[in-house]
Amino acid sequence: MKKIKRSISILLIVMMALAMLGGCGNNSTSGNSTADGDSTKIEKTADAGEAKGTESNPFILGVSPMSGWYAWYGVKDTGIFEQNGVYVDLQFFPVYSDSLTAFYSGQVDGICIAASDAVAPVNEGVDFKVVLVNDNSYGADGIVVQDGINSIEDLKGKTVATEVGTLEHMFLLKILEENNMTIDDVNFVNMTINDAGPAFIAGSIDAAVLWEPTLSTAIGAGGKLLYSTKEEPGLIPDTLAVRQEVLDSSSDAVQKIVDSWFDGVEKLNARDDDFIQAICDGAELTRDDYMTMLDGVTIFDKAKNEETFKDGDDYTYLSYTLQKSAEFLLSTKMIDEIPDDLSSILDDTYIKGAE
Image 1 (cartoon, rainbow, N blue to C red):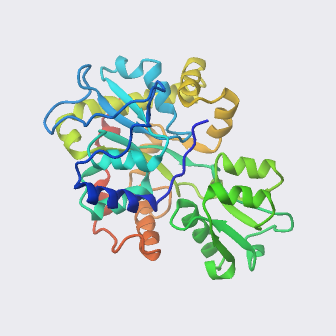
Image 2: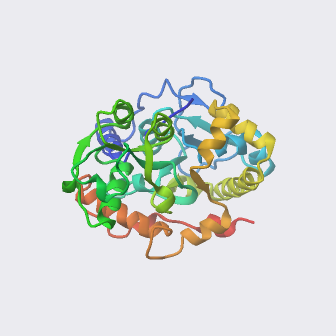
């Protein structure tokens, strides 16, 4: 099974790597695989001004393992891209941070990226736009606890583990705040999810904030789900970002890609057998495993995208989520300042232009 950690903190690693490479070097991506599962070396994308999305010059889309993003396999392998007149190569990145490096150094044209990870590069002057929301976590992230813990308040004095700087860390801080608590009220342990899951199962910690599939594994081993992103809609959106130079040179191709996503969502929502099988083949998942993972996200169609791109004052609105994510990053010293205008990276042109 293809798995990934979605972490805000790795953005700093990416930016450091880019600084050392001068923004033009090739990171170590030789182990990445294409949508067809073949190992490949990623070629640098076209120069500014050269149109993308043609058969001879396809749009290169970086995809990492996540249940919502897996839908791109269905879009490609059932021929939806071609039906809409655009050619797209999916480049699979087992390591999410590798995809970020490839995107910011111009090796891919677009990327699947958690919205919170789009904050830090704004301060670094990276020129891109978020043009689409693919999904929101809806139970794929949660707090799992041992017997005897029945509320957030019961976590006081208990050992709670997750990794500092991750989306799970932000989730934990928000839930504590909503219950008039802070991180100082618990015995917090900074631990990767790969370590926190087994530690919880072994009984070494009282609670852990995990994501799928580790979350389900912990629950299956006897843990109790205390709270999940089902209670926090919009907190963790996953998006499609495109480099500005590609938007400038190939706007028509980007429109066709967004159109193709919405066509795919129709098939996914209808549980089209061929579409789902294409996803499972691309993601190397059984149908049962994928359908279980799919229950943990809300897939975004055109109507949901139109709503989330509006201005609003809760986590159902993308601009609000970005602002709160920036405040979190600042509070944890992951960034030095909050960007002046985060809304500048949001572009709903292609959502509005979709048929």
